[in-house]
Image 1 (tube, rainbow, N blue to C red):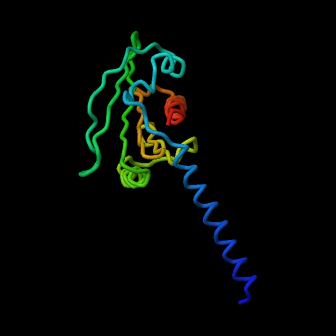
Image 2 (cartoon, rainbow, N blue to C red):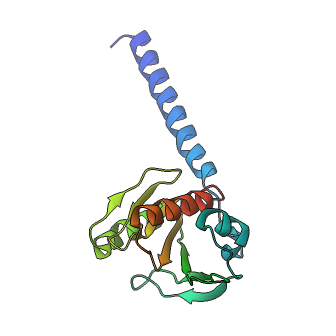
Length: 171
């Protein structure tokens, strides 16, 4: 191999390492940590806009760990202020790394029954057999479920997707 080929190869490798490094560092910059009050990511105004009904402020509880050794999360439950009664559960977990979040996300999916992958501003998402959405973005995993779904299941799926996109935009 000639001297110019060696320098050309080194230059190519350097450029490749630089591009890959910038790509991964940009990915880390795209996802940020949720606020300390994760329930505040979904306001009553946003819920009313997407779901078409006013909602009370949230009740907040600790969500159980999904698997042994995984972190607990936060359950934010919102209820309508008038009839017909409806609840929204927003469950969120913050893992130590994006890889850890992705691992738990993939490991849990088979427990959700038949599912449909959903594209969006996140790393991965799917709608489960109960028409709820599961999302992973960066080191955050979250879940949104409406209860009751009512007759229009397709509309409920659109609504939880809209809310999931709203949350993803804050991460």
